[in-house]
Amino acid sequence: MEIKILENDNLYVRADLPGVPDDGVRHRVDSVRQKVVFFSGEETLGGDGDKVDDDVREYSGTAGLGCDCCEITGVDAKMKDGVLRMIVSRVKIKDHDNKCTHFLPTQHSRRRRGDGGGFCVSFDLPGVCSDDILVHPNENEVKFYGENKEVYEHDDSCRIFMGAITRSSVCAPGVPLLSHDIAWDAEFGVLTVRITPPGSSNTNRE
Image: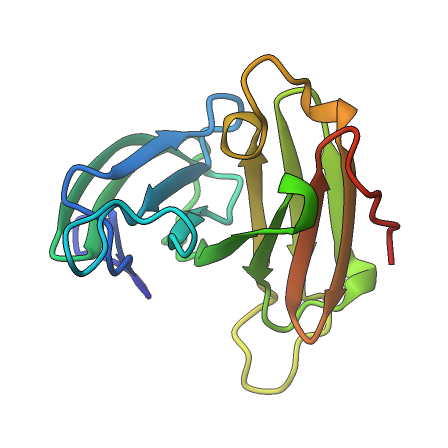
């Protein structure tokens, strides 16, 4: 994964999504804060050309701005040979003389099916302890926010991670997200969210 600031002040984001076809990526900009790009993709074919059901690889992640002086104005996304490349354009909404160099690190999630038809989704949040992670489910998605508040020598600044698990990615049609049992825990910089449908064995929050 790579993210950098271009000479024209746009952001360049590159994310490796092996197994995802060129037309298999979706992306959207956070409509409320105009700070974050959410993207996701799914492997659709196995090595023999058959559809993969049991061992499918699914990816989701975020990239965007970590400042309060800019907003995203557009995203030019291109997917080729398992690599997603995005040019994220932005505009200043607050004037100041300093060049803005703050951005959110890109992140991926890993999703697998659990017992009873549920899902287990893992996010890499390196450097973030469990006490500094917030998880907030609502009727449309499970949002999370993490921040590594302890900045060590030679670190430029703290890192902020945020993202969401959408209802459509883990729920059967017509089944409310909040009717599921939603549990989470974090250890060694990895956030794991377990979503179990109603009527299945419940998973207690750890």
